[in-house]
Image (cartoon, rainbow, N blue to C red; front, side, top):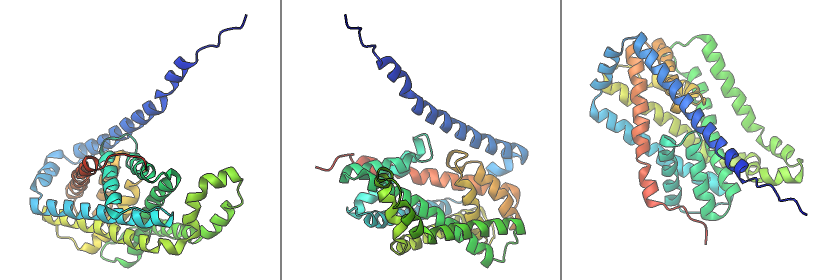
Length: 324
């Protein structure tokens, strides 16, 4: 008599929640670490004057910083559309803008730093029926943003003289910028190497290889990325003016990109705690007091959170659908 086939459903059900549970644990760990670092800074440097400084921020400057931040996200959506076209994806700008805003809103609540990127890749991929190209366009968008951040930080480390950073910090910033620039120039060579990979691997990596093979097509997106990174420094210059801090814009063009390099590391939720610590060090060399630097970092975190809430418009206006 044939033996009954064991039912593996319970085991599947037990295994499926594991990745989601790990994602939530990772999110909780990063959020907890960020909050702990901020709490430690507030305790060590006395929370009362820092919170008084935050409350002193003038509403007009705070609102202007939020408006410029959201405008930068609109520009980022246009950059993403340019990169998607390199991969052969079409669509109107309004479509990319809506999906980008969906990603902004998702980043506020979904565990993991790439939640928003995954959301907009899924929206775009399902809309056009080309998931591989959609994922590659989002990865290229994120990668070029980081490259522009590294390059701007390195350029300002050389050009800005109003802030005297330690030589070791300047050398590290220049090294990161140089290595990333060489890696960008080596894109076509890396693409030719990827073309020799096994067919199955080459097929999976095909959409991404397009970006390696066509560096000149990426120049408009790189220019937009540099403008975006500079606008983030201007945002924080506005916040500083709202606090009554008298510091030249060039100091922000130097300190903010370097701080964002550290804040981009997947250590805490949205760079919370890491950014404030970096501000404490970097703006200290610019002559800003420690409470002012921490208050500025907290205000910038609040700016990005409020700006991200605008993404709810994308959710309300954009259904997730497959191409008919």
